Length: 337
Image (tube, rainbow, N blue to C red; front, side, top):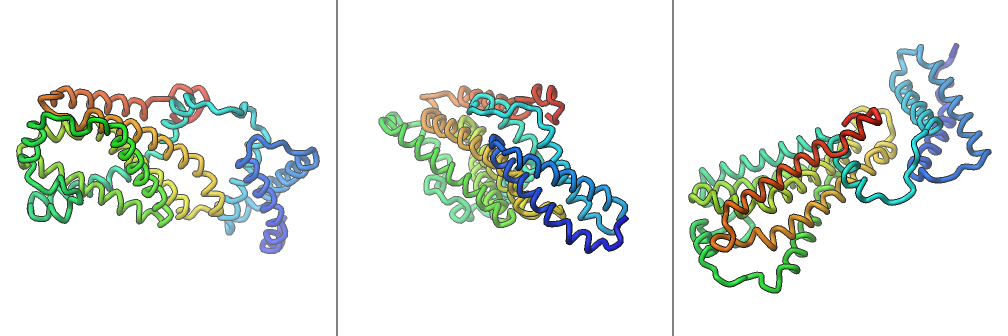
């Protein structure tokens, strides 16, 4: 029985901290080899933490300390009884078709929040253009979007020369690097506890909504879909996933009342954040190629129906990939899909 709870916690905490430090090192470097003395020390610390947890469970006045010990003991138990083979080499196909979509689904709530913020921005931008067409100069930062959509469509469709002749590769490279910088910025703004990420997502939504309503009001819906869908159905989800990664980082910083220290919370999500942002980069590479080699060509060069169909197929495949890829392996391992 514990007579003085505060003294007990003060005397045992250094051992808990040492165990947590060892666990953090093991999680950061899963392939490291421990000496026999280190293994014995690790096991003694685990047994001591488990005994402390059993002793402190009867004290309802220390729920936070109990939860902290439960997490610590569970992590140590997992390391001691780990039986899965640790990967020792890079497996890009397994990462792409299993790790990436499973990581996306594991943080699906952050994605829905990212999507909701962007849709709110779309609604704001669309309503602003609908009720105040003169706000176009403020909402749309790109010069080629400032004019009348009908005039631009007529100019695009009458063009007979290939404006990107000899420059498609450089143009696609520019699109890839620019959009990747924006995505990394959306992730990095998660360090503002998510405020910066949400502002960036909302602003992107404002531009998208304003452009869409401007072209629809001008009767150029078919051109809009044929122009945006081939690359947009990949590029826009990529930006949303970058926002998702930024929000995951923000959630780890905030903690939501968790007793786990900040450093441990960041370690928990670091691998997932890196996975998501690398996935974003791959999606943006594809989007940049499609935008340079297909999206910029309109009727009569490329029929709008063909471009819309191509974008629809891309969207279906991307949704299936994110929703189902790797699900069968998760079921075999007894994990959530």
